Length: 272
Image (cartoon, rainbow, N blue to C red; front, side, top):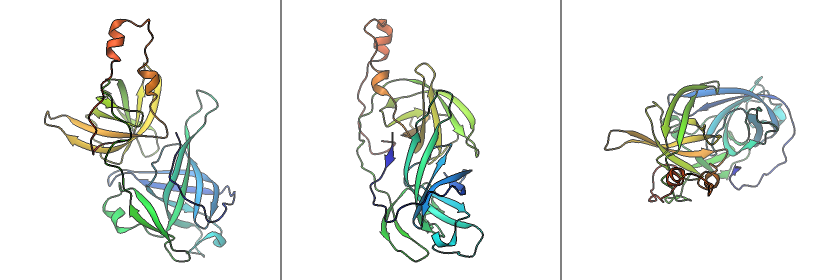
């Protein structure tokens, strides 16, 4: 699934294959870095490919040996260090089952420094408001506003899933087997014992159904029963729920009963 917010590009991008270093603070405690190459760039933004997902609206720091003609500041520095707002993120189609997933990312440059609100809470997602060309800040940012109601109703389906955290290099780190409590094609709620906070990216896999997908933690709370639950929003793709809840007519009664679905009540917290 392609995730993109509507905007108009003010100047065509140039296809420059320069090296780029990306730094992302998912939470106050967790940060990752990745080196890649530009796909295209101009004064106001750039496109590149990552081996791990990132959600739209997040701020990232970029370090690029960019020609001074394409800079808005630090013209004489050997490398251009600029903050970017993720405006577009989509999974790159693979050509085979063994090919690793990659993600095409587009960012708009916001300036030399992030806003103070980001320093206080790096999990904030932003929307651009106003262009301020020719100064140290090319975008004016506002906290992204999200609908109170979910875009899809959650269904009460207990899928067994493997949950994995990612380390600073994008490799699987901690693992946990758990069960979804509610799920839609856009997100899910799961109980967990993992020490992960809002903003972290997790990988969810269903071994029985062959589904593997990334998700961002949007909420975390300890319920009255003492169990910690996290609300997740899938990024880069949707969970193929239609395939999951359409058992064959020849399936055993126990399977048909397991696949019976119930809509959950809409809520204002958690993922979409």
